[in-house]
Image (cartoon, rainbow, N blue to C red; front, side, top):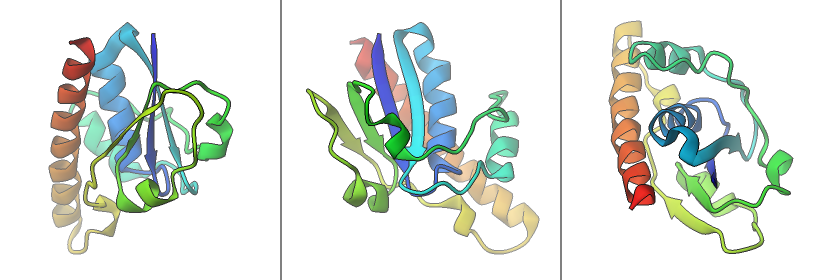
Length: 138
């Protein structure tokens, strides 16, 4: 069983979405965690956009990366440049991956336009997560 950490700035949107999809795709092959350099709470729009794709992240919590420093991670995925730059050292043979997804929480406009951006970013993270788990399986 692999331990995977998804790390973002505030653990509110991108890392929460990635955690949801990685859990969905990995099933029992991995234990998935998500955390932030800071904690901003799980964004209600992230919960909503994931529910639209039948993934429930409503029980997720926003956690600080320091809570997980004792877990032997196999993989750490940073999903924004800030988290990549501020990522703490994890001992052992940890493989790090990075993809800078846009932050949907910074979207401006009408509610419909903002949700469209959340959906767009969700789809990017969904594809990345499915491909990541596929590579993990191989």
